[in-house]
Length: 264
Length: 258
Ligand SMILES: [Fe+2]
Ligand SMILES: [Fe+2]
Image (cartoon, rainbow over all chains, first blue to last red; front, side, top):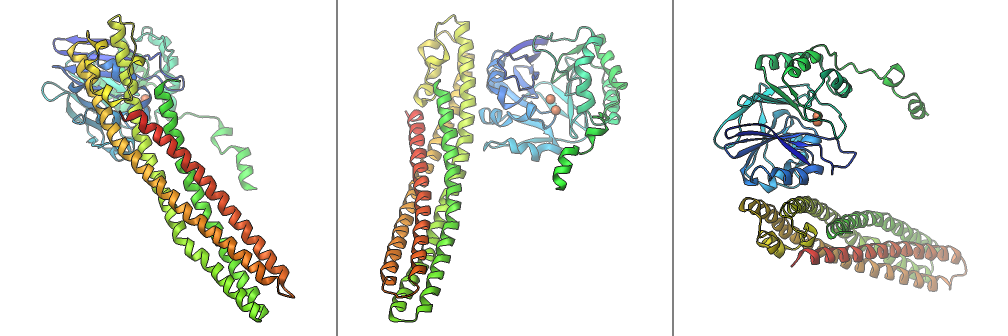
């Protein structure tokens, strides 16, 4: 698994983990982000259980495990949350924050471990990175794509972690940052059309993010948007009609062959 | 195949055996019901004869019809032991899976450190299943040049695995106990099967003096023998699975108890 520092100023640091060459082919590639403030760390979307060993050993290059104080899970998907019990068993006083909507569901990933989750209310909240020091903000991103979903904004680095918004299915050797936005669209478009269910909620997320005005938008899959690409990305989203993915009349209906078999 | 993979395979095998034992114990119920139906049929046949010989056949068939009632609690017990076992093995294998994920983390952490230190050793040179080795892992000579921070991380992961090992050991031993219980129940059931066959032979002897109706008693006894055969086949299969599960468990316990 590769890792890289994407922001560093004084005692405040962001590290990205991903592009894992050891990962099995059928496992979707994910970016895990770690914010280190004052020696204490917070993991954003820690990833699935399949990549837990790689993430764990790579993180130790930056921070002592006992200094991981917080985990944020943007939503309930397995590529984000299936490793939660492993983290909790290893570091029992870690605080896990996730959408309140999903706490009961995520507890199914408990694996027999003492599993306490802190639910984030619908309107979002301030979350402390460690026991002392700075905080980040959970920004509502409901229905983008999950019905209970948040982004994380860090005012110190002005990075917004956007979860699945801005996700791109890219080749494993793709650069960490989006270079030419226009040619990056092809890696994002299908993902957004199919996984994002609501144009209305997507528009409202873009409005919130424009108000926050981040310098960098970092998604959980794909490449990071920085500089002028942030505005280009938000403009692109504003013109996207999602939740309308059509598979063609033939197939959106029940498959005819199957239907006829049932009817027998 | 490396040691961890072999370990994972053993766990998955013992888990499958547990489920198979449960399925077999459920199948025994229908056998018991068939036996009961046959015995009732025997009483009805004997009742039709109405002589002194008929009376002894009624008594024998009566004994036979009591058998399923007697073995019913044994069957219930066996089923409940089997379902406890399947549950226990499921919980155990989940905890072992966690153990394996931590072991993989430890391997990859050790490899990173050893490579950075230009060591010719690799994580495979450590016995990461062994609690004693885990206990003093960060003090291992091969990790002499590792810094304090890294040693702390190694200790933390090793500690979780030591804890999981102790808990798993407990659970594995409980599974072994349940397997012996199931073995005992199977033994009792086999004895009852033997008795059913014995009753069948007596019915056959008694009915041989009959001038009529002999044929239906021969059919009855043939059916009893078929059912007891089915019972025995099922119980033998369970016994084999129990033996296999015991071997896997003992091997697993051996590889983590040092
Ligand atoms: Fe997702
Ligand atoms: Fe995702």
